[in-house]
Image 1 (cartoon, rainbow, N blue to C red):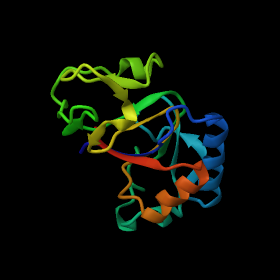
Image 2: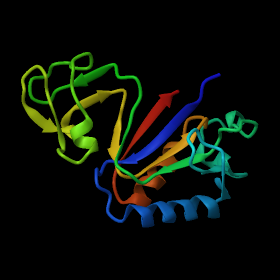
Image 3: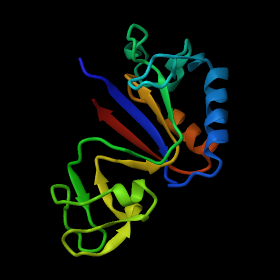
Image 4: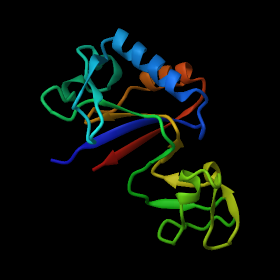
Length: 176
């Protein structure tokens, strides 16, 4: 079985005071018992995450599928500039409308904060990364929350994230 992640990512590339906001979101999720209060080895990388809480059912559409029995079942916090991605089907340039998903394009200038855009290999014009149409959805921010092996999150839960973050979010699903 492979692992699956659902990331909630602000649509702000440089989220202000991201460490404080990450702590606020965690405090809310802990208070609601959606995640456990102690860090543990419950995510896919060497960092620690917050394992699934007893009230996690409040956040998902199918509570019976919650991964209480899996070792990888927690919330991973990301507070560095990152690309939250999945296998790309389409990437539409906002200028020429070409699908450049299979072309040679580069996200490194965005990741390394050298640029806020992508240069289209078809029309050679740069546009903001947020103007491109990624299918399925990708996220770009210095703040993100990945729920490992959780079933689909409810729209109410996602809306509450948007309220607490003060902005819209991208919801990115990935299989690893």
